[in-house]
Length: 515
Image (tube, rainbow, N blue to C red; front, side, top):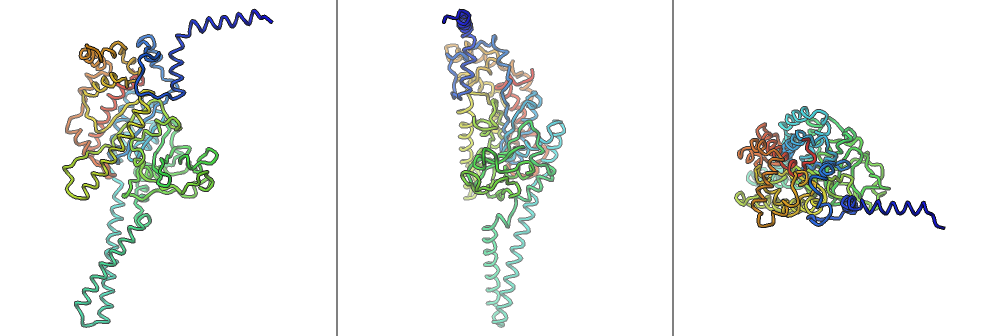
C-alpha cells in the first residue's frame, strides 16, 4: 500500500544527507579511524581530515573534550625524581598539569608521581617539600647493614680460626707453625663458606628492599596506602613481575596484571597496600635490591583460582620492562590508555669507551648499551610506530640539548608527515606551506614556518631562559642511585626539564596550553 507521508519523509532524509554529506565526511572518517584503530605514522594528504582548513575548523581543533591526557615519568633513581619536578613545573605553568588524567610512572619517577598525587592540591607546597626530601638519601640504612653484615662475617671467621687454632694446640702443643697455618686456613675457609651462603640466600640475609621501603615511608609517604591516592589523576605505578615476565602495576583501586584475574577482577586487594612498598617494587633495581613479594593478607583469591595458575609475584624495577612509563598509556587495550602522551625521560645514560679500563667497567657499559637499545626500541614501539599519526605525543628527554634545534626538528617532522593535523592547524600552518617544504621553494618555506612557529610558542622569551651548558652537563653527569642530591644538582635537572617540557608542549600540544 502506497504511503505518501512515509515516502515524503524518506525523500527529505535523502535530500538532507545529500546536502550535508560532505560536511560530515571528514569527522566521520576521523571517528572511524579512531574506533577501529587504523594506524599510520604518516598522514594521507588526500584524506578529508588532512584537508581541513586551518581557519574554518580551528574551534574544533581546540576542542579536546573526551580526550585523555597522560603523563609518563621515567625511571632513573633520584636523578629522575628531580628531573620530573621540572616537567611538572612547566605543565603547571602552562595550565596543563591540572588537566592530566593519568600518570604512569617507573622507578625514580614513581617517587615523584606518588608524592605529587598525595600533595597535588597545593603545587608550591608539593615542590618545596619534595625538593627538601630529595636532599635525604635512602641508601644509608642498606650501607650500614652491609657493613655490619661484612664485619659479622669477619668476626665469625676470626672466631672460627681461633677455635681451630686452639684445637690444634690441644692435639699438637709444640707445633706452633702448624697451629698458625690451621688457624689461618680455618678462618679463610670459614669466611668464604659464610660468604657463599650469605649470597646464595641473599633475599633473606640481605633484605635491602625492606630497609628502603621503610625509609620511603619515613621520608616521603608517611604510612600512606594506595587507597589514599586521589581519584584524579589516576596513578599507575609500574613494576616488572619476574614470575610472568610482564608488567605489574599499582593504582588506587586495583593492582596486578591480566594473569592475576578471576572473573575479570584482580585477586589482590589494593586499598590498604603501602604506597612505599609499591614505589619500592617499581624501583627495585636487579642485583641491588631484593624482589618485592606480596603478603597473603592482600589476596582475595588464591593463585590457583586464576585460569593460568600463575606463581606468586616477584617484583623488580619497572624499567626492566619499560623504563619510560609510556607502555600503559599507549596500548589501546590498557585501562590507562590516553589520547595525549607527555613523556618525561630522565633514564638516559652516557655510553663511552673512555671509561672502559677493566672487565667490570666493560660489563657495566655493555649493560648500559643493551638498555639504551631497548629504550630506543620501546620508544619506537610505544610512541612513534603505534602512536604518532594516531594521537598526540610530546617527548622530553634528558639527552636532548635545550636549543633552537627543537623548532627545526618540528619542521622536519612536519615535512615527513609525522605531525598531527590538529597540531599544525593550531599553529596556523597551512597545507600549502607544508607542501612547499618539498618544492623548489623549500628553503624559504622552511624559514617562513620556523618564523611562524617561533612567534606561536613565544620563542623570544624562551630563548632567554635556555639553561647554561654547565648546568646541562651537570644534569647529565648525575647518577641514577638513591643517594641525596645537592640543591645545585636538583636545580640543574629542574631547569633542563622545565625548559624542554615547555618547548615540546608548546610545539606538539598547543591545543592544551592556556593562551
